Image 1: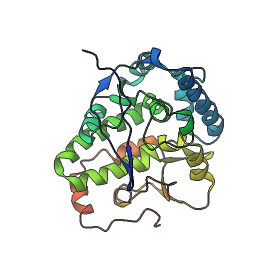
Image 2: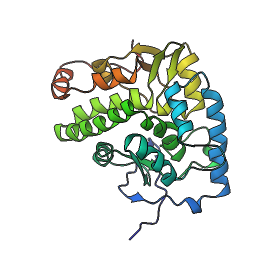
Image 3: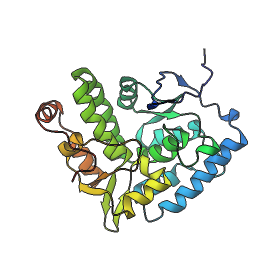
Image 4: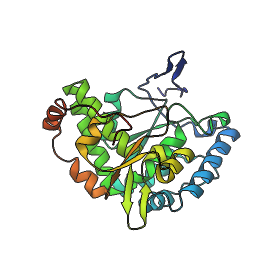
Length: 275
């Protein structure tokens, strides 16, 4: 029996947002999107695409074009899947909100990327507390067309399943790797620094802050340093890490992390803004 999609959002309390998790995989209710939903997508798409010229890496922009995303309407998952499967064997699955960690890792390990089916409301254009359809589709999905990045994501999922079995500290280390690369990564190119992290490309403010503000640290990719570095979820990032290429990202994260977790257990954690 098909599950009727629900909108599952974090709960705001007097102590801040509390995550609410859901495990359901749902069909994209494309015919149920309102005119406001499509308009919100179009507004965000136009703004970010214009902003990302000479800011996002070429791999991201070219992949987004190849997938046929545009401003006129919310993309259909099945149409994107036809292109994505042909390129790298990945598929998109609709979800209602945040997934528990193990569920998320298992999807990635099996080349399935979870995409939140619902899009933010018009009053949330500039900020939403959790990933929505725009963040997931616009920000994450294009680079799954890149074979090296797609392989890294699958390897990350497999590593996540393993880390989940090792314990909370290993899981924390691995989560930081995702945060500082997949979500907030920068890449060095002959034309200068460019964005590839989904949390940056889907955000107007973070796009400008990551490249143009003098405030944040920009540090060369260092696996153990990343895994030791705390991060903030309620403000622009204080530190960004810069890869030289997606090949570097894949090769650096290919080895078994088990001995790395043991080394990290003996080292101090690094505050988010420390050089």
